[in-house]
Image 1 (cartoon, one colour):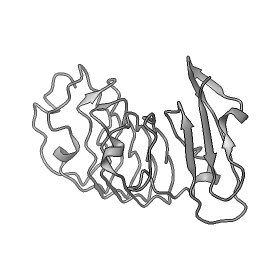
Image 2 (spheres, helix red, strand yellow):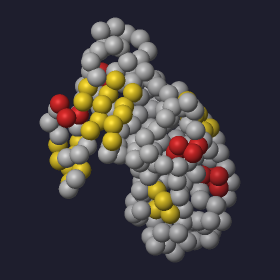
Image 3 (spheres, helix red, strand yellow):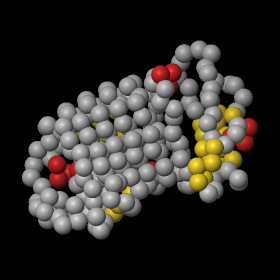
Length: 219
């Protein structure tokens, strides 16, 4: 494979290289590399990922990584032009409190499934809508029980019918007009599965026009 990725862990230790670990083949020309690091002391570290031909970043949401606390696509941070998949990037990170990203950076992302799933203390997300064609935002905010403000809007063009299932599942404290979460022009995909999309979102308000969602024959 021509993939080559490096991780600088930010503590002065040796840089890790993906070619130093055995890859797991996921599909043709699609490999997963797992790179691990243990810090000698508690603290804040700036982790830098660089290289070429990588399209996905995710972290292993085991007990020893639940303290992950970071700037996610901050205003000053660069983003690799080929990176279009951050599925499960911050899955089950209870120390995530708020997320604000540079809007144009999210325009590059196609897959955000489970990105903030079970971030139980996340309260605010702004400037976080992906580009028009979305591979998946399924379970994006699932079980973010304390999420109160969010300007994320579902994509109009979906790559598959299940792209948005459970996106806001159990966001019990989310306060928003439901129309601000749906695409302005409705969905353009041939079929759309909205299973559990807003399940348990007791504080949502507003009325959805029938031709946008509930009366749409594609749903």
